[in-house]
Length: 158
Image (cartoon, rainbow, N blue to C red):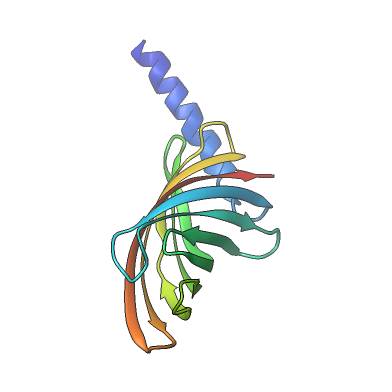
């Protein structure tokens, strides 16, 4: 049984090293749920994730319980294989948030997402766990804001 496990693991590592080398070039659609551990927003929310061919940026359109509508764009600086069906990524990005409460406000900021990915069915279906610290500035009244968001989600790559 141990030999079978070693052979299967070796095949997965070899296959994964090629399968994930060019990831990020195609179209992807997915979703995520997130929790903000800090910042001015209330904690829970979710978003629609999109990636377009030829553009090295992951986009998100999200909402949370404040209510807030936000847009994020992340550029993946680095990504690679961990082992077997697991890989990782790290990037830099920015966000724009519109608060929809009676005192509507706008916030702009920067974030640093890093995550671990699981590819259970080859190169098309991705599950991920992401952490993203960030800092921003609200426009009116002027205020500094910081975030630490953790997200759990999936993307389907075509």
